[in-house]
Each structure stands twice: as structure tokens, then as C-alpha cells.
Amino acid sequence: MPEGRVKMASLFLILFLLACGRDAAEDTATEFVNWYYVQIDQKQALPLTVGLATQKLQRELVTLQGVGAEQRRQGKKDLTVRYTLDKSREEEDRRYFFFTLKVELPQGRSIEKKLLITTIQREGKWRVSNYDEYDVPLQ
Image (cartoon, rainbow, N blue to C red; front, side, top):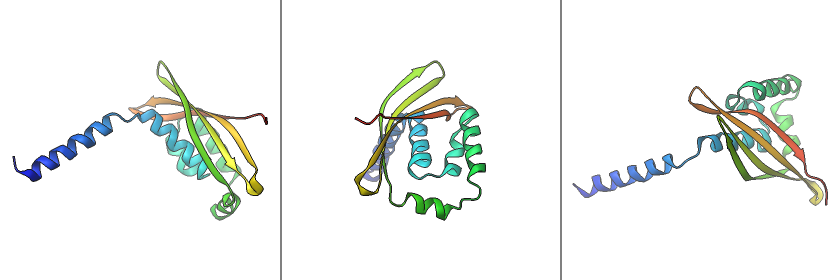
């Protein structure tokens, strides 16, 4: 086999193996956290949801109708948001993902929250079916 084809076949095999090792449920939960909590963009998060999560986002979007995208960007420009996936748990047809979210505010203050993102498989795709956040008590 010519050297170019060997390299191409090797590259294809590596990409295939990497794709197989990905966790679609985790990817969906992480993408949701990024759009909803980091980018603060409910419209981008909406297609990742089903059921109760969709209803929650739709209610928020109605509430935010008078607030433009530029106003939301201004409100978050002084914030730094970071998150880590702490653990996950699988039960029957659902996967639960537990994140820690840290929001760094101006003047060196910060807020920490725990997130629970529930995913479920619908029509062959993982979607967020619910999400909750909990304040971490100050120490």
C-alpha cells in the first residue's frame, strides 16, 4: 500500500477510535452547561433539551424577552465562569452529571454552585431533561 494511503488509513483509524470513546451523554451535559451557565444563552441551550428542561428554558426566554442580547453580554462581561465535572451516575435510561460551577465576580468575590444535569436518550440522541443548581454554603 502506498505511504499516503497508509497515513490516511492510520488517521482514519485514530479518529474513529477517538469518536468511539466519546460519551455522548456527557458531551450533551457539558455543552448545555457551557451555553446556559457560561455563555448565558438560553436559545443555544434549548435544542439540547426535552421535557421539563425545555419548559424551564421557554419560561425564561419569555421572561427575558425585553432584555436584548447586548444587555445580557454587558451583564456578564465582568464575570468569569468556570466549571468542572465532579462525577456522573447512570440509572436505567438516564445519566446524571454533577458539576461544580464557580463564578468570579468583580472585586475578587466569587460564588460557587453545584449543578445537577439529568440527561435522557430520545430518538437516538442524548438530551438534557432537567437541570438544577444549588448554592454552596460559605465556609
